[in-house]
Length: 369
Image (tube, rainbow, N blue to C red; front, side, top):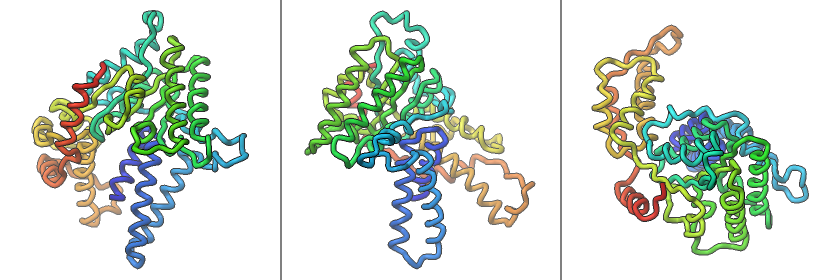
């Protein structure tokens, strides 16, 4: 479990999605700490501690963690929000998003085309976009690729970056986030606020304390200021969720586009295998991507990435087992169809079938393309 969380964090980190990468690093740290406490005399604990320290340092670099919300330090009170913005353009392009043509089209209509030719949109354009569907199907990639396409300032927001233990700070964080976004837009640069796992921020709750209510109300107020009152402003909100049914009606109304990001189709699975396999050293001619796509029905895009990675690790393991790992000139053997088949046999899809029914039902009822 720790390896899975760490790998997810590393991939998110590479794609520039800092907020979700931090969450994944924290999850890996928690798992490793639990292993150390359960088995205090285990020989591998030193390795676990080393990984914990590495991940903690990476989190510090990603977040610029400096007690930004300490009481009485007004000069630093908003630095964590500022650190949510990527300093460089995300390195994810539309070519990295295989399939999902309906989602791409909706994003182009709502963000890309209005930015390039605002004069063609006298009624303005949608600024609130909700992408929903099973985990690991490309929701974060879509947001990052969109930011790359229009060279937008990209804010990656999650609950940890907004919520504060200090009274009144959470709604102030929300207000400052949108204030900063509006300022950057007025300076000529488009802004994308990506709210991952948005249900954890503004989802339906059985009980809410006062701070949560004020924070939710502030979000609605700020979204209204973007959506309704400034038709020519290039500030966009992309919310992503695996639980769209946790969002209540007032927030859904503010997302003019509600886009289902489903499991990849046959053609998309084939394309994903081809995309990731291109990054490996050598693929044998007997590998048929059509057959691989057929064998991986109901796999998410993330599942397919894990399959290709596991195949590569299988080949690398052979080098270490043979004792040739010290030879820097060693070449990995070609990856064959049997390598893929053996991995697929032992890696099942991560999405429950019954959850797909819920997504399709919600999409049929509330989609907005």
